[in-house]
Length: 84
Image (cartoon, rainbow, N blue to C red; front, side, top):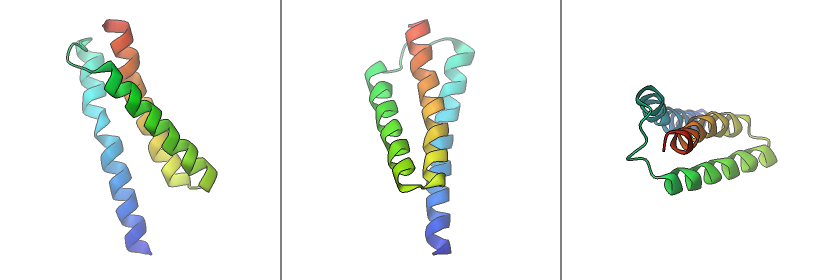
């Protein structure tokens, strides 16, 4: 079971951290020219549903990982709406 937990934590860490470089770049450059609003909106909707799924299961790691990812991806959507 420890290997499954480690696998899940590694996957959650990588998929969450993957949004950090893009979010940082968008907010520093104020450029969202090449960002797809529809893709990030759908991604945020999916992440929100994963969060709800984790909540309904009482799975704290799933909720934490998706909560952080939702904030990062959501910040990119906000930047796209704000900066065009």
